[in-house]
Image (cartoon, rainbow, N blue to C red; front, side, top):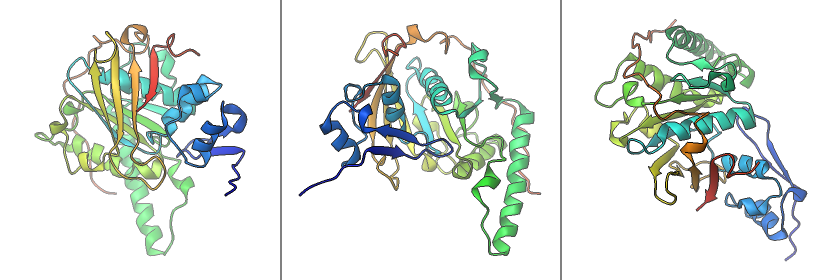
Length: 296
């Protein structure tokens, strides 16, 4: 049977420009067949001429960019904050996704005009916008209409990555506050605004199941000194079936903390708790960059 392969492979990314891979970007016919005919998410760095393009492919085929709700977990010192910072920064650098940070980074200048989630004014703005949009949605439904995608682009968290470190202080199973409910509301509506969310926990059992745990699309397990001394290894796992070829992916990422101190200081202080008075009413070389992407 003769199979005609396309000359271009396109991955649509929620809220971003699509990723375009041409036949000339891939080294071999076999790799191109696996990419186009098999829709494989597991091509390796050796299959691409350009490392940056491979990096984009690696992230896109995890599904993390498509309004994912990702729980990052692992023991203290396992690199949870590091990988959350790394992925959030990479999504900004490679795909232009804005940042909402629940912590103060050690080098704020590299993040551009990021939003500070811990500022109450910012959270009030999000809540106000959501309440207005909810009212408009109800009116549209009464009229038998649906809001266009453009309506959601006015949200300040549209096409953003929300990175919340030490999430047991924000949303803990044993202590659910208005802030917990607020985060849950953002999570439930993330698809409309193409919002990606990272939440870091030491213990998965701390995650509120109804508001957050059941809505998670991905988990990232963190460990240190397993494969390489001093390095952190991360298993990126899709935990919910998706309607596309990214379903069920399992990938590995390695980061060298000593090479990434410009991004995250392991001694960086993170607050024990945030203000909780939220109104919920209506109306190019991989070694030199300190990371290593792998398939598994």
